Every structure is written in structure tokens, then in C-alpha cells.
Length: 627
Image (tube, rainbow, N blue to C red):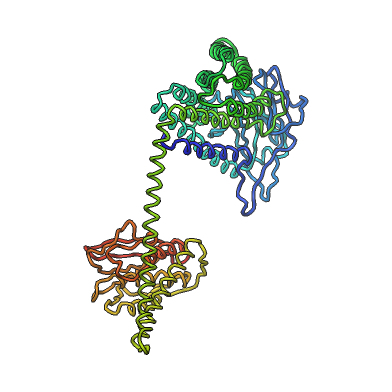
């Protein structure tokens, strides 16, 4: 398995957190500035069992107060909503978007009377291809003109062949469009995570050749396709395709495939024979009943399937309490897992079947049940894989762990060596100077100068450690002021040449470059660039500094000639504490270019290191003229 178990644990956690986010917090519009907001008022429902009432007739019908969420089961007839849409935001919305968040609908009609008293009607549903719907979206709905409907009752008629619950949502057009984008992104994430899980399970199948893994992959593939059509994304891919029948058929296939997998799983786990026989009867029923779809109303078939599925879901919880074999999982773990699963079943089915009031939680019950089911089943599958390949997994896991630890230790050891070498070298040299000077009867001017240089070197080392730590912790504050970049570079150049009198700094293409930036950060960047260049330049050579005005940005390039043998590793030159082995005799901390890169990121700029010709290297730093 080679570390797949912890990977899957992370994926389970991501899936759970992702769906909890959807359940607990619908996306909201931006909080900045005036907002447009549209809400329902006086939302009410009326059920027409005959399904024959028209909009003109429904006006006189008796409506009952309702919420945005409604559970009415797979019933014939037509469900009517009556509502008013009201602007309640800081700004008046000209247009609103109404979503009917329910899958597999046959027909939805929206009716209202205009100012002249004439009835206006719009129609949508899965019996229409996306190309023919008024709203080109994965969700069914209507785009409404608030000037036509505000203050007037709107009547929404829903005829369904496969709907257990309905949720309505209305909002200002701009806000709802933003929500649609968020919904699409989350859906992509959801399907991606499931596919990743299936790929990993397929890998386990190839490793173990246990058929239970193959059953799981096949059952979940049917679920994915059904969910893809169920949520309207199939219509987006094929806008001329009518998807209501496809969705219904794949719901039936997915329910059967899921039940068949549960049967295979319980056989593998060693559930008692009487429980397996009853589960087999359920699976056969779920395979036979869909045949009636060819002869009877889809609502009858789907209602039957949902009731059989509900009873089967309850029974597998009972079966889980009758485990006879603990080869793969203990009885206690099995009972805990399926007790948790039973809670998600009740949240899902009871409101949908009309046995409990419809709520937002109940509407998302299928999502909750799916996440819980997937997470728990995957947990069991990994226990199976772990049991079958325990020895192999332990060996491979130990080897991988050792390899990872060795890699980490190598990196840490190299970093420690670099730090220790830097500290011992810099402090050792400084202390040697002090010991030498103090060994003399009198401290001469020459020795005093040496001591001052040693102190300066130590202070510079400590300063770079301090700056590096501040950058790492994000403790550097930026206060922008107007600065002449060229003048500042020349000031820092004088300091840099004092450190290496045998190297000359030459300015090419001189020009004034006024910018708005933090002077402290900018001085640190320039001083590190110049001191790094003069320190590693060949004696008696020239360091070239070039300025460039790039419109909204400015750039400074520093070129120097260094020994061929001392060319650094371009991939590591900006790493913290990196020093090329050929220049270790020179004082340094390995922090200069790291600090430069991090400070430039803070200033919304960047830098690069390149070898331009044989032993000539160039570091270019760029930054915005004004952030």
C-alpha cells in the first residue's frame, strides 16, 4: 500500500470539511459597497393531485404557508408555489434569478400577471434540452424582471417524475451568478476528489487482486455518472440532449450497484448467513423493480425503489451487528461504523419521504449520507487491504519512512553544517583577531583596525541572521516613501567598495528612477546585492550596475565576474544558508540573496540569477514604481 492509508485519511477529511462547508454555509455576495438583495415573501404551497389546474384556476386555490424547502415524495399531480419577490437591499435589483434546486423534473411553469392583467408564462425542466431552457445553467430556474413581478403574486407549478424534495432560492442576478460560479467550482472539486479516491482504490485492486475493490469502483462510477446527470452538468456538456430519462435510469442503476456492492462487502467481512440471504433478496428486488420502468409511471417505480432502498439501508445496519468473523474488522468497529451510517440515513430519507418536516438539513441529507457512506466504506476497504497485505505494507511503509526520514535528515544536516560552519568561521576569525590583539602589550592602530573589522563582520553576520528571521516570521513592516533608486544605489555602492577595495563598481545607463517604496527594505536589497557581487568578484575586475525603466516597474541588474570553479548552483542560490563549497574561505552567511528574494516578494517584485557568459553572473531585481 506504500503510504496510501494516510493519504486517504487526508482525502476523507477534505471531503468531509468540503461538504460541511456546503451544508452549513451557502455562499454570500460581497460585503463591500451597496448590495442588491431579493427575497421571498408570503411563500406558500398547494398540491393539485389531478395535475390539471391552470394558472388562472390556481389563483382561487387555498395555499398553506411554506418554507423554501419542501418534501412531497414521488407523487403524481402538481405542486404549486405562490410567492412574492421583494427588493430589500441597499440598492434596487433590476433583475432576479430564481433557482428550483431539485433534480430530474419533468416540467416547471412560472406564471404571473403583468400590469395589463395578462398572464405571462415561462417553462423549463429536464424534459427540455438546455438549449431550449430560459436559463442556461446546471440548475433549473428563471431570470425575472423585478419591475414586472415585484408586488404581484408569482405561481410556480412543478410536475416531477423523480423528485423527493424541492428547494427554492431567489436573489439578485449578480449575487446568484456569483453563487453559480462557486457552486460549479465546488462541484468540480467534489467530483475530482471522488475520482481520486477511485483511482487509489483501483491501485489497491491491482496490488491485492481482491474483487471487493473492483466492485466498489464500478458501483461508484455508476453513482458518479448518475450524480453528474442528476445535478445538471450533463446538460451543460450536451446542451441539445434531453436528460430526464437518462437521470432516472442511472438513479435506478446506481441504487442497484450500491446495494450489490454492500452485499459483496458484507460477504467479504463475514456477516452471518441469514443476514446475507436477506440482503440478497433486497438486491434481487432492486434489480427486478426497475424493469417496471418500461411499463409503469416512473414515479411509481422510483417511489418503490426509494422505499426498498430505505429498508435495505436499515437492514444493513442490523446485519453489521451480526458479524461472525473478525478477520478484517472487529465487531465493535463494525457496529460503530454502521451506527453512524444509520444517522445519516434518517437525515436523508425521513424528510424526503414526508415522515419528518422538510428542512435545509434534510434537503442536503443525500449529500450527508453520501459523504458518510463513502468515508466509512473506504475506511473498511483500507482495513481489508491492510489485513491482506500487512507484512508487505509494514516493510514498504518502514522503507518509505526511512527514506523520507533520511531525506529530511540530509537536508537538516546540510543546513546545520552550513549554519555551524558560518558561525564557527565568522566567530572563529573574529575571536582570533581579538586574541592576537590582546596578546600584544599594547593595542596598535593596525590591530585596533583589525578588531573593528572583525566586530563589523560579526555585526553584519548577526544583522543578516536578524533580517532573515524577521523575513521568515513576516515581522517586517513596510512604510512607503518617495526614493530616487539610482541615488540610493550609488550610496550603497560606496559602502560596498570599502569592503572590497580591489573591485570597482561601474554604473551603466545611469538615470534617475523615482519610486515609492520602503527605504529600509530597499537599502537591505541593494546592499546585499552589491556586497554579494563585490565579495565574490575576481580581484581587479568591475561590477556593472544597470538600471531599467519598464513602465510600471523598475529593475536593477548587478553583474560580476567570478572564478569559474566558484560558479554557484543556480537552482539553490536563493536558498537559505546556501553557500558554494568553493567560496567557503570568504566570510559570509548564505543569507544575502535569500533576504533579497523575500524582501522583493514583500514589495511585490521579484529577482532572478543567471550565468550570462562563462564566469560572468547577473542578478536582476525588479519592483513596482508604486504599489
